[in-house]
Amino acid sequence: MRKPFAHQQGRPPARWRGSRRLTFAALSLTAVLPLRAENTNLTDEVRLLREENALLQQQVKSQGAHRRHLDLIFKASQRCRKIVQSLLSFARRHQPERKPVSVNKLIEDVLEIVAYQLRTSNVEVVCRLGTALPVVLADGHQVQQVLLNLINNARQAIEAHQAAGRITITTETSGQSVHIHIQDNGPGIPPENLKRIFDPFFTTKEVGKGTGLGLSLCYGLIKEHGGNIAVTSQPGQGAMFTIDLPATEGTQTVDSNAKSSDTSINHREGAGKKILLVDDEDILLELVRDDLQHHGYEVLTANNGEAALRVLHDHPVDAICCDLKMPGLNGRQIYDWICAGRPDYARRIVFMTGDIINPSLQYFLEQEHLTCLNKPFPLRDLRSALKNIINPAVRI
Ligand SMILES: Nc1ncnc2c1ncn2[C@@H]1O[C@H](COP(=O)(O)OP(=O)(O)OP(=O)(O)O)[C@@H](O)[C@H]1O
Ligand SMILES: [Mg+2]
Image 1 (cartoon, rainbow, N blue to C red):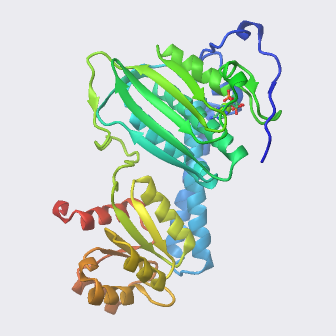
Image 2 (cartoon, rainbow, N blue to C red):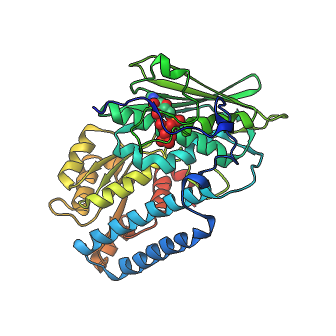
Image 3 (cartoon, rainbow, N blue to C red):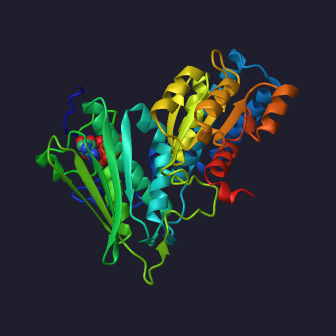
């Protein structure tokens, strides 16, 4: 366990000393990150990577090592794209704006950015997002920046102290305010530090590891929104940060289940649905599982046919996504087993294949009215196939 030590890094500029309030203009991430808005050609480079990768994917038809490496590059470039986008959106100077925003949507978007880091740090996130919350009049970028800082702090505290942990994010409304609670089960904050926690440059991280500016930035931004931020903590029992933001006048209600108008992720798309994902390629299992989980599905995985049957024996599922060609039991044999033993699942399968479908396979798929996606497929195609299977009523 890494033992943190308290120190005040450097000395704050005179005008900040004794004051918690830092304006966004005084302390934007542009000052911290050597990244400028004109670096947007980074986005073009990443796009180029993805497009070239897609072209190669089409040319490399075999299942072998090349294909695995291409999948890996695809996944890495996806992640780069998100990182570049989020860095740019945070680093870009822009006039603070006030628009009606859904707090739940901001949280979902931030979780999308940090999902990978949280997962690799063994930190699970539990969201208890209130439904029908009023919107708040806010600068969405700034509120996201606050959420990001709080989630990162919680993750870092957990990581420095224990092997795994949990962050619980709750939203609710009372009176004219929307409340966001970010609670972790990390080491907590000693009482003597609680008093200074929002002070600029207060950090317990090693020199070079933390600026001590994160929470003072949060404090300044939330105050600028006419809101409030506070913390409670019992040492050894984690910390809870609470943000209160004023709800807009003439409160509009936002249904957090409603499909957003842009292309961003709907984290509740698969809520309450359990999927069995079967593929012998671990990288693909991981890629598809992550995507489905981001969209709210519960995902069980099996990397061979025999394991898939064991899962089906032990767990009820809503749908099965299954690779056709696998060593041992292949997709078609799994389908035969299902028809014989669990015919209720026969209409709940989506096949995936990296092979050219030969005429007899084509005939089989057509005869049985089965859906088969050719790899590499856009992940949204798989999700839409799943939706059709799970809710046949909405089938077009
Ligand atoms: N969830 C938390 N659990 C335990 N300690 C926390 C938590 N959040 C913040 N702290 C404490 O508050 C201090 C200040 O946090 P702040 O975000 O301002 O700076 P930092 O995290 O140290 O540096 P930076 O944000 O630049 O990485 C941290 O060093 C840590 O000691
Ligand atoms: Mg911090």
